[in-house]
Length: 118
Image 1 (cartoon, one colour):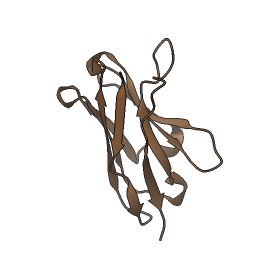
Image 2: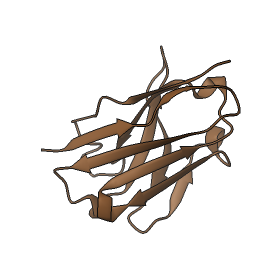
Image 3: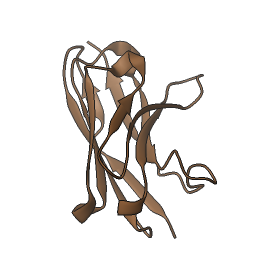
Image 4: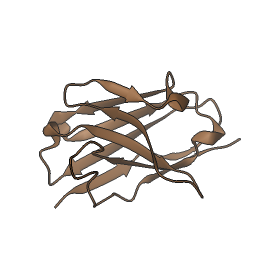
């Protein structure tokens, strides 16, 4: 059974940094493209960063140049380094596999809250 466990969120001032981690189990992690999503209150969940099995990355425009996604297949973990954080980055952040034929895994993790506020 797929299990995704996100961690690393917290309260940070504007301009600050956080590094999120997502540990995956129950899957052959290395064969999946992975991504980080976020969901702000009252908004739909959006994909903000993705990394392919080969390490190619892509970002939504609002985070380009500030966020960096990476993966460690030996640890079954995907990371999101977030710099120059803005209040509009406040959301619950989740990881999943966005490009599966059947869509993301149905078993979403609990997410990790990121709050950017002074």
